Every structure is written in C-alpha cells, then in structure tokens.
Amino acid sequence: MVNLTEPLRTERLVVRPYTPADLPHVRHIQSLPEVTRYLLFGPRDEAEARVQLERKVRRGGVLAAEGDALELAVTLPDGTYLGEVLLFHRSAEHLGGELGYMFLPEHGGRGYATEAAAALLPLAFDGAGLHRVHARLDARNRPSARVLERLGMRLEAHFVRNEYIKGEWTDELIYALLADEWRAARSG
Image 1 (cartoon, rainbow, N blue to C red):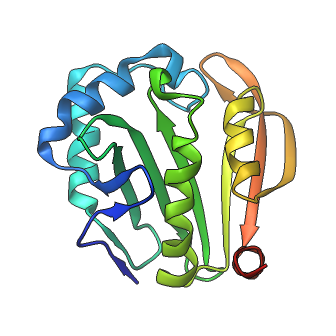
Image 2: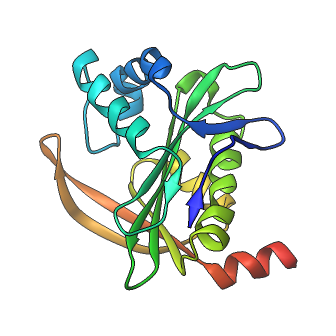
C-alpha cells in the first residue's frame, strides 16, 4: 500500500498530490492542443478541468487497491508547475499497474518526465507490491516512447489502427517493466 503523506523529492523535482489551488495549472495544461494531441481527450475547458482536478484531489496520495490511482503534480522546488505523473492500480489479480504523464511543452527536453516517472516506480513495485507496470501511448508520440525507454521499459506490442480517437484510427504502443527487471537494473 502507498499512502503518500509527504511530497516525493528527486534531484530536481517535487512530486506531490494535487490541491484545489492547482486549478490554474490543470486548466492550462489540459487546454493545450499540443499536450492533448496524443491523449484520449482533446483540449478541456475550465469546467472540465475543474471536474478533473476534483477527482485528482479526492484520490489524494493513496494507492492500495484495484482502481486506485496516484495523480500527482510535478513542480520545481520553487513551485513552478511542470506537469503531472500518474500511477494506476489496474489489476489486483495480476498485480498490474499503468504509468502515465503529461508535461507542459515549454519544459520538454530536460528529462523532467523521465525523472518524475522514475520516482513512481519504487511506489509501484516496493510500495504497492505490483508485479508489472505498463504504459500505453499513441505510436506517433516518439518523445513519450523515449521517456519509457529511458526508464528501462521494453516495447511489448504495437497494435495497428487499434483505437478510434478524435475521428481517426490510431496505432497504440504498449511498453512494460516487471518488478524483478526493475530491481535487477537498480542493483546492477
């Protein structure tokens, strides 16, 4: 079980549960077409962003059972909002989780997504006791695939025209990492 009561701190970042004060950040990031281009949803308006933030706040920092999710804000130590990382508990039976992230374009190319997502892997494998974590992405999103590869995840599947999103058939990639692979990479 994970109960995140304090923010996670990495070398450069703070990864923390959302608060109601984060509405301007959520509204902004979810309104940008360049951010939502490869996501399942298109740009959201303020009302939709508010609903999303309320869900994020309600979920808090607990990952204990199937259906739970950590949806965490990522900032610099000075409070500058960069984006978010997500860890979903997808299957209690198979001890599976799903990793996700989205970052503001102006903060791209600096390794923030990799650093923040890497901070969730100990929570997934050691905290929640998950066996496998996967990530799903639009095959056209090469920067996201590079993040997953830097995390040590492997490409497991390329589904051709698998999902009909925003009026078009899109290819989907699945990357994954097993707990024992993650531990071996950390110790080696």
